[in-house]
Image 1 (cartoon, rainbow, N blue to C red):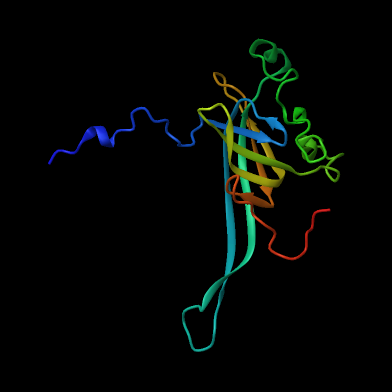
Image 2: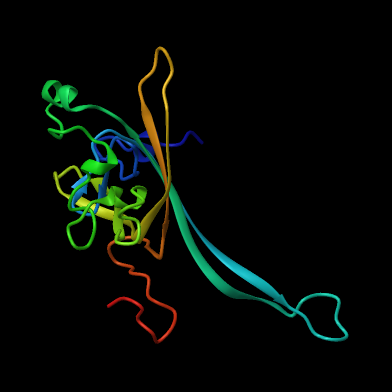
Length: 187
């Protein structure tokens, strides 16, 4: 029997997949213009629990939780911003004002004179909806940059890559990760 193709098509429906075309990335209060990609991972480290008289482990117990990721930005300068209507002073990490919890600069972690005083920031991925609103699809909380690098070739554009660590990762706007212990280490 031939399947009914009209029932199997998605004509007239807006797909709800999260794609680069519908994603929006924010660091602190700033929407990252010309962000090329973001990747992140959560790792739970386990140790094997062994007992006498058994070759196999009894269980694998969690002992640590790590969140890390990378972010790439297509760089532009102050002069280029006049042509494309983007941020007035370019988009170097030093221009990412108001990205930290106290309204500071996300790039402070790369300046040795401000390293100790640097603060964490939240990185959030949103999906732009057909209605024009946005919905959070993932939030990495209390991030710190750990690496910055760049690459350019004769015919290409400057792309800066950043690596970061985070303390917690929320899966979406409805599920917020919680601290594991009874101590809240944040003031």
